Amino acid sequence: METYLKVILVSHTPDPEKAISAAARLCYSPADVEQVVYDTGKDDKSAFLEKLIAVGHLSPVEHASFTFAVEGISRACSHQLVRHRLASYSQQSQRYVGEEDGFSYVIPPVIKEDKELSKHFEHLMEEAGRSYGYIVKKLREKGCSIESAREDARFVLPNAAETKIIVTMNARELLHFFSIRLCNRAQWEIREMAYLMLKLARPLAPAVFRHGGPPCLKGKCPEGSLTCGKADEVRQRLSVE
Image 1: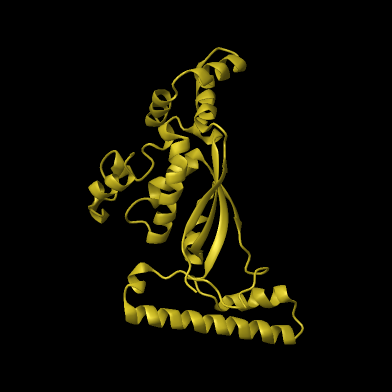
Image 2: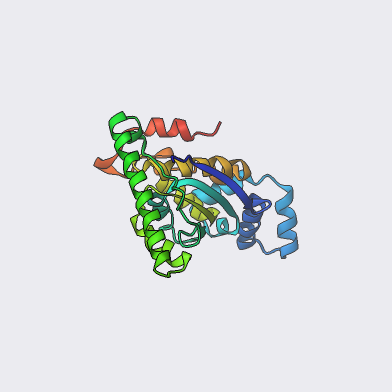
C-alpha cells in the first residue's frame, strides 16, 4: 500500500536562541556565568545571533537540539538521511517488525503520474510482498525464529519500502542539513522531508533558521554548470513569511 510523508517535532531545547546566545556571549564576556545567562534573557537576541551566524561562529549553535519523528519515507531516503553522521537515529527494525500482511511503500511522483508505470510499479511491490511472506513461512517451517526469518526475508524488499525514524540533530547540523537537502538538485523525497523539518524548527529559532536552506538563498549558486537555474523559485518557497 502507498504511504505518505509525515514529520512531527518530538522535542527541542526549551529556548533554543537563549541557549545559543548565552553560549556565544560567554566566549566574549568577562562576566560570570549567572550574569551572562541573565543578560541573555533580557535583550533582543535576533541581531546578535544573525551576526554570529553570518561571521561563521557556529560552535555555540550546537547547544540547541531538535528531535523529529518521521514516517512515510522510503528506505532509499533513510539511507541518505543517515549519511548525516552528526545526528542520532532510531529506525523501525525490519527484524522485529514484520511485513507478512503486506508492506507500505513510496511511489516516486514521476512514476505515479504515469498510469502505465504506476501499474507496473505497484505490481512489482505486490510481488515483493508475496515473496517476502512466502520466504518467512518457509523459513519458519525449517525451524527458524520469527526474527531470523524476517531478517532474511527482508532481502527481497525494495528501496521503496516505507520506514519510520526518529532523528535528533543540533541546530548547527540542521543548518548544514538544510543547506544540502533543500537544494533543488537534492533528491525529491529528502528535500520534502527537510522542508517540513525547517517549517517546524524555524518558528522556534527564527534568527538561527531565517536563512536555512541552500547557498543560493543569500548568494550565488555554488553548483556552477550543474545549477538548476531556479534560484528565484527556491528563494520564494523558503522565504520567511
